[in-house]
Image 1 (cartoon, helix red, strand yellow):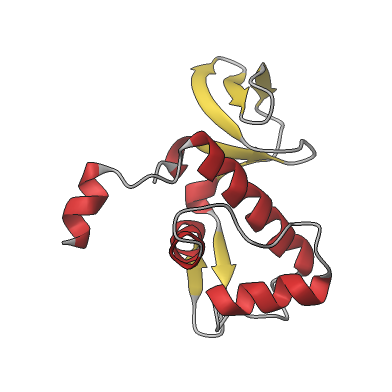
Image 2 (cartoon, helix red, strand yellow):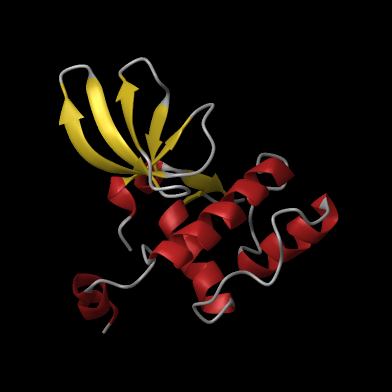
Amino acid sequence: MKLNQILTISGMPGLYQLQSRTRSGFLALSLLDGKRISIGLRNNVSLLSEIAIYTLQEERPLEEVFKAIKEKENGQKTTISHKATNEELEAYFFSVIPDYDEDRVYPSDIKKIIQWYNLLIDKGFLEETSEEEAQAE
């Protein structure tokens, strides 16, 4: 999985791939529409590789959550839409991460995770790299 180059930008929809750094910020490519945008240093930006989900024991990196979804869905898009009801989203997420902290992980978070997962599957960012395959063996 190549999540260390994928960004989420507060106030902007979708995900972005880091292209290059500039003196005043960086250039990113939208995964939704393919447009290149310039992001300033004042924007609130997070790498997906740095995001984690609260569980009852510890925080689980988003990469592990995506792997669990991918395993459940056999490498395909999710069977549930991000537009499903909150109850359906929570039930689905419990089937993927049974010990997630429902008091600190909101339905809006689950919607984002499902949207991001489906977008990343479409764009091929959740494919196992040869390094990860070697570690799995």
